[in-house]
Length: 300
Image (cartoon, rainbow, N blue to C red; front, side, top):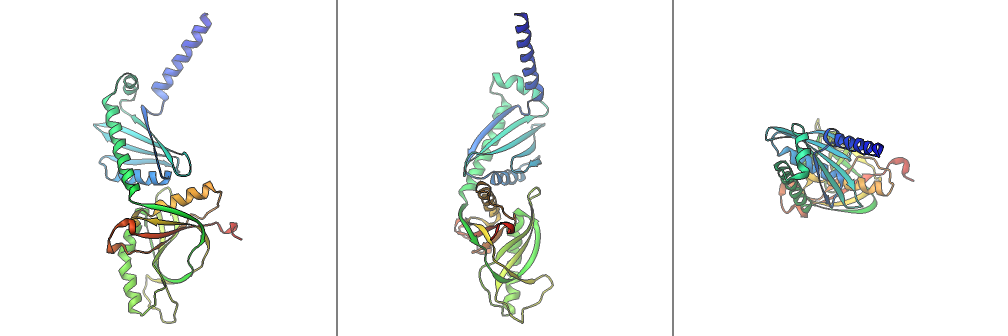
């Protein structure tokens, strides 16, 4: 009997020690949302930019993201973990830990609805509301395997963050268009963006902003405008409707589709834009064809 009591006491002490000193969060809030983990991650980052005394301190691929905030003089970590429930649903689990008052929180939370819990729940609910609003402002439809466009094009190489891509397009849209028009170049379709490098960890991209044209022997020359032939290749295709600033949400949808269907891809999306962002209008009427190329060694 004494041995049994000793074992039970030891287990309780170990459990208490784990709970007070090793448990990674003071408490957890979870919710489900109809989108991909990548879109939730980008939405957390966008929300974070709007907050004071807040920063992203770690990202673990598409599995987790850590946001650190200073709230009422305390340093609080929000650890977002992402789980694909099915083809369209992501479960988000947010572990919240006050680095300055963790033990106190763990001792009080099981017995009372503390101010820390209330404030944290309010913050996560604010993010959830913003996320749902964002998702209502875009549509993504994956149509399967199709060929990317094949065309000769004029382009300008650019670099920046994913979120800056639309800004780069808008800044150069008139510049490239005016030079080509002044040179009597014949256009051959809507402009597109060819991603040449994507650093997922830093959300940075290198890309070519391209105008399809008819090749001729007398193309205008400018130091930053180049010309080349874009060859067609097989790719997973999606139709995106929404603001072009967030067209990368389709990239994550295409990556998730590829993973579900065991399709090897090159993480170098191609985006064809059918609207000029400078003209404004209802963003849900803006359309883009988004392609995620298949790895070349998988093609016939």
